[in-house]
Image 1 (cartoon, helix red, strand yellow):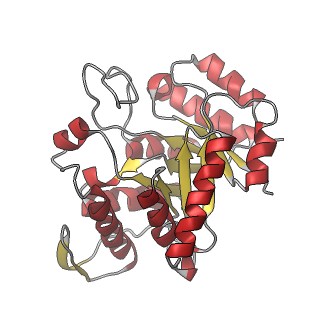
Image 2 (cartoon, rainbow, N blue to C red):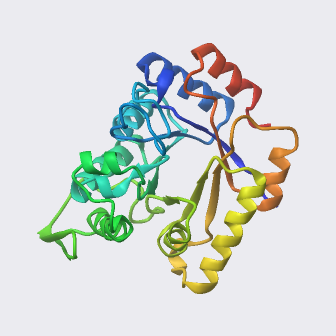
Image 3 (cartoon, rainbow, N blue to C red):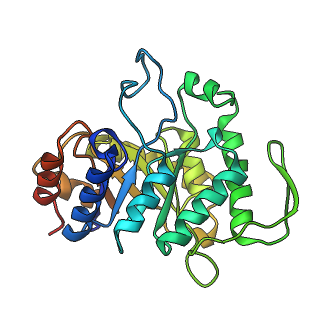
Length: 284
């Protein structure tokens, strides 16, 4: 049984995309004892909305690194999570620079949540095929980690190639401190394998206690089949529940061993409604 940390999802979306609301909500979450705030990401959305698109095209989503840097400047202790960055849509050296800069400026508060994506129109708009997006993501992550930790770095891959290059500043979470934590999102066997072999944590979105139990079984099966590097430590489990917490949900997630609950107040709610939600659900 765990004592889940509480976090807040959607700090860059909907009504929280408003600059003043974004800062007010982040400061309120920090004051209330929330461990972290998390962004969502879609660079573009199909217009008109069509399945499996999760949001209407008019919903604003501020770029993750920009939003979290803005929040970092207005807060001091709350952690900053990407929930998630769609990794194959990003140029890895450019993204590595952006996220290292965010971690540097925030004093080492960034948590790198990533996923491989699923919206074909969005992938096409970003110039990346939907096929092989998992393999591309794994290679991108390896290249980024090399740039975060190594000077005069060289990488020779299928999708990424560079020779004797250095990117500074390095992340604040670097030598002598834990590296930028990587949290892998997704509910497939491939995502479970990626979390076990490459991630410090796994992130399940819109997962009830019942679906979380099935997810954890899938992760356990992946752990039995694939070796986990010792330096990654124990796999941390983060969950965004579907809707508001019901009586008994917190205890149910704790009994399952969930480490972090990333609550979503709803991006269509007003600032006052979001602030009331933060207060009503704040950590005990």
